[in-house]
Image (cartoon, rainbow over all chains, first blue to last red; front, top):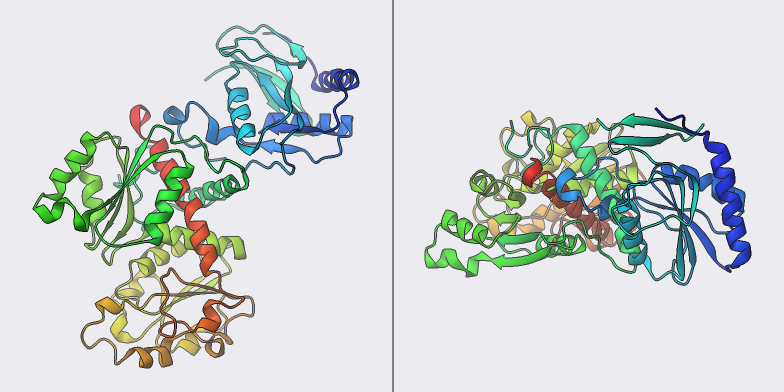
Length: 168
Length: 319
């Protein structure tokens, strides 16, 4: 059992990295999108820390999952809500845990159904390895190597904490 | 186990609103709610049913229902075929089962069925290959569950909760599969009071057993209601002595501003369409501020997307 780090310092670290990246390549129109559910919790804090002018967008990628025919409809699906046009915007996409990369693939597909962003950066709280797709995080709160079959889960929304468990 | 649910209680076919548990009815409405966001995107599609094939089998004419099923399937990225069977194989004497086997041989995943005979969709669901889902798009006088659910969706969007509501269904209840499905859905969702308002000749004799209050006088029946659902007078089924005349029907049961004045001030007026202006509803009401008739049409797409994706999401190797 790995000891998992506290969440708040990780988010502070992410906010610092994102600020530094925005200073190096200034963007006129950065907007932030969180992926439901954990990604939204992390994004809410980052959004406040960066003081972005546009409201936070949220994505529910249920309709874009690649395992729909195996797992069926998630009964807790929510509408995605992007309260801005994504065309020509620099998007900071936020999720809690980056694992296979399939969620990010689905999120990118959904974002591109809304329009054509100028760029997309990926910020995650935990990069735990185990990628099955050519997807990488630009900013990560922490990077861990977890054995297959182990899972990290973010609990929240307040306070946020990480727990590790074996997938049922 | 009921025909339309799998062993986990999930929707496999959608044939009737009768007997469906409340959480499932609510899940249909919630899922439909999340699909309404799809039309806000520049690409009005989600890839959920990509590679799946939906066949619209319409043994009875329909424009609105068939079109919204087609649009719903397309917004889910499914391939859709519209088969108008009154002009097709049954005319050549092919049996329904033979036709079903042939259509299944084309590897389709879902049949959307409209038929003039009660029970047709159940029959097809019982005989369909495993993994093929059947959606009832109206069978005889029996059921029209997607119409009922889009009506429930429209009611919920305006009124939020079902418990405090008084809902009146007015007109030709006897011939109406829509009314029957609405009554089951309203009761399933816990609506406070469901009323039916009709002349004796247009009511099934056992109607009270469905859990409704019967009114023969429209002014008494509309008093303090939150929702008024008008039904289409099925003129083509009106041969014989059920009604004196259309004008007599309008005088007694047609919805006018004057009769509507006894309903709650914020009551909404619904109609499954197509409307007979001046027969069951006057134009001033149908086009008036309390009418949500065109919203019902729009909501039909999201509700049909919900039902189609839920039914196909339980099929295949996982079922």
